Amino acid sequence: EIYQCDWSSDVCSSDLKWYYEDGSLMKVQEYINDSIEQGNYMYYYPSGKLKDSAYIINGKFHGKRFEYHENGQLYGLTTYINNKYRNAITYRADGTLEYYRAYNYAKNLMYVIWYDSLGSPIKYDGTPIYSWVQEEHYPIGKKFSIELLVADPPNCETEVTVSDWDIENNTALSETKYIPDQFNRVNYSRKQNPEKDMYILHIANIHDTITQ
Image (cartoon, rainbow, N blue to C red; front, side, top):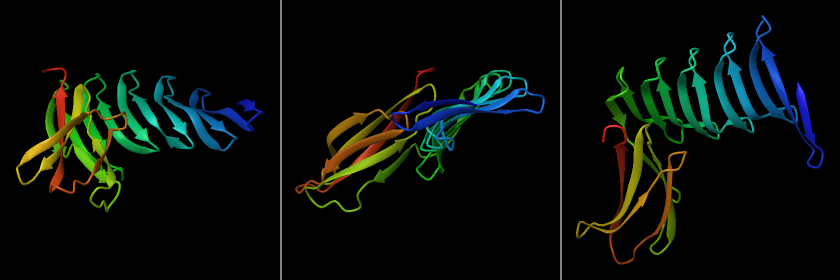
């Protein structure tokens, strides 16, 4: 164990290590105050090659987690937000894409892409947009907020178009484009229009940057 303390804030950090029976390093995890997992996490194969690495905040995966085949090729690249999946990419041992998965707030699968042995997409399932209205009731003239979760596959550029749509005339009154953040989120706010009966239209445009 290696300890380091910040006496001005009463926070102590430590690196804890676990070993296989033959003495080779198995796992390293950083802690604060001896009990809270916080910091770098690394797991190794018995051969000594890196198997899994991530950053943990307050005991939860947050950000990108990298998992590797024993030959050193990337196996999985998963993006977490407070221990919840957002994006998950799986690679074969030869480095080609195998699956892409996007998840909603409950960690349920919302969109998946399967790839062939050359890494080209062959099948899609689910919906690339999952929306959450942050307020259930929004009277005329009141501002309300919406968050979208949008699939963002590898080798693609994802853009979301949000339109205020005039139902009566079947036309878009306004149109704004957004790029999802690293956790697949698009956030925006609107006010109910007292003069027009409108709905909001969300369109995800996902462009393949390899073959286009």
